[in-house]
Length: 240
Ligand code: ADP
Ligand code: MG
Image (cartoon, rainbow, N blue to C red; front, side, top):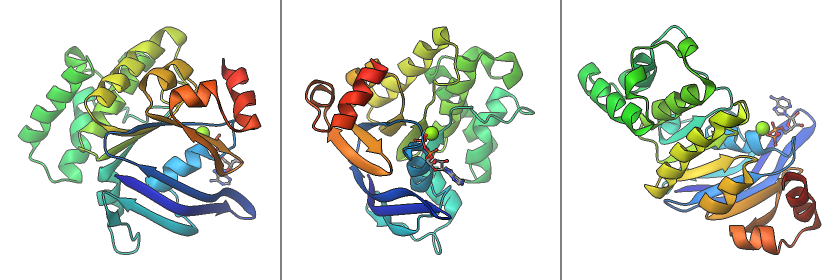
């Protein structure tokens, strides 16, 4: 569904991604881990074309993306992203946040966008918050709106960059539960997270990034039980 080949990304002299090969199958859930600064966010941003790669290729659902010819808005509709800090539009209600992109980018009729948005708000357990402004919501509720907003574009892949890191501990579970439900429904996902219980229970595969390279890629049992790389062992001890 999503395939990166030999992805290189530098910021000036700093080479952050040093040749990443990563293929995510339809309905696969990949959890991406690694210490701060290892390049996790940059890799997600490259897959979403928020960053332009210096070398390599990215394919979405078998289509080789050419950022020169393909419209970025179309690519971003296919590869959704959920951020740590929600990034909701503060001057719009919850419903308006969710219908905005389908109407603007996909030219969906307002009535259809509202129908879709209401379904999605129900899915994330926020039907009763449709007409509320984001400032009235808890962090967990905001993040669930952000997920509904991403889903409104009907993406082929959803990328999550530490979606629960900014939340109070008691609000983490409600967001992870929504993500787990999406995984069970067959959404293809890459999730950067420090929630190792989620990784263990939901991931099909866990990938460890270290200084811009993938040093470990394994199913959760092997990743935690029998990692090949010393850095992976150190990381597991750190987060356990
Ligand atoms: P992670 O998400 O794993 O913590 P990042 O992908 O955010 O890592 O960052 C990897 C490295 O790239 C860090 O050294 C960071 O300072 C650097 N970096 C990230 N974005 C930029 C940018 N826009 N300009 C310059 N350096 C950046
Ligand atoms: Mg990051």
